[in-house]
Length: 487
Ligand code: ACM
Ligand code: ZN
Image (cartoon, rainbow, N blue to C red; front, side):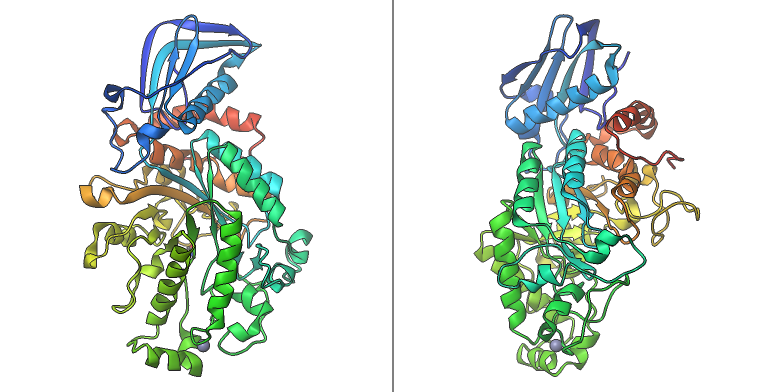
């Protein structure tokens, strides 16, 4: 009899005998550090929270004891027990093999991103998802709150963002998206508080200066052409972005950051920065004037200048900026502040470059490569019947499992700057939470193991066997999951 848990604990040592309990057992909880020897196999990159989040679980014939140095570690241990009870409590009886589990994370950032612009997920759905993810030790929820197709964040000084920017007119998709919606401050506080109870930190994203159609529809003066603009009901990348020659875009950013800082305790704010087209800036007299004043050779360097200013505005508010890897394409004049975190999505090359300090500026990095199983909006397999996108090809559970945020080929110094990894669900092709779950599970289970379990303990065949047991847990939780081929 084996203990089947996802993600796989760092170490499980079986001892003789079994623990039996009629019903759910009481757990003896002890606060205390995990001894150094037990953590000796830890290959967590330097600076990671491994010892802080560690726990030890001792199952003897008589009792179950959980020991951890922190509430986060205790919570992680409880999630392992939760999984065991879910799968091993049968006909009212729990039977577990005696064992000693010592467990700790490989990475401190174990993330998931939900795009709530293209599809507006309800608060109960988001809370339930955070809870299920936390069962897998996923501890960062990246909340993508703004995009061309809908602005979901109330901002007092710019009230039209929520009033107008949250609504699009699209007859092809269900009514709740057509009428539009945003999360109220109370709802956001409720989600943040709930997430904290699951030891999950919420990192909000306001995507700037591209993916800005919803902003421009509300405040057309912030665009290069003056509009008219609309909240997009098409998907893709759009030429209209915030005008780099207009100082008021920073008034908007300041108001958005103030709103985010008031609602989210996280030290990080994600500023997006992906897929910014420069066509409008090339034509716009105000942008050209700005480029000349700043003595920038290329139009695209205006983005570096904007990113530099946004990061500084966040620093003034005690926050650290995270951006998609495009923000690395920087200007020699406006280098990214050193503490800016790079989220590598166009494969892992940008992330490796940022972490390695190429060009003299080393950044902390979160790996979320679309080419390696981290884009959960991609089809599970490439057949017409499957929902999802095909960009970089289908994206199997095996690919998600094989992703390594800090592969062995990466030097020690660079590995130490990898905070962890993340799966992302973009929602262009999602029109119900249940479809979202089908795209997320079980690939996120594989990613959870990749960012939690020591590399030497990973084994896809073993994972696949444990997944059979784990699927029943997801069923009990009412979570949809893809059930086809894993490779
Ligand atoms: C992205 O997928 N545009 C970050
Ligand atoms: Zn302009």
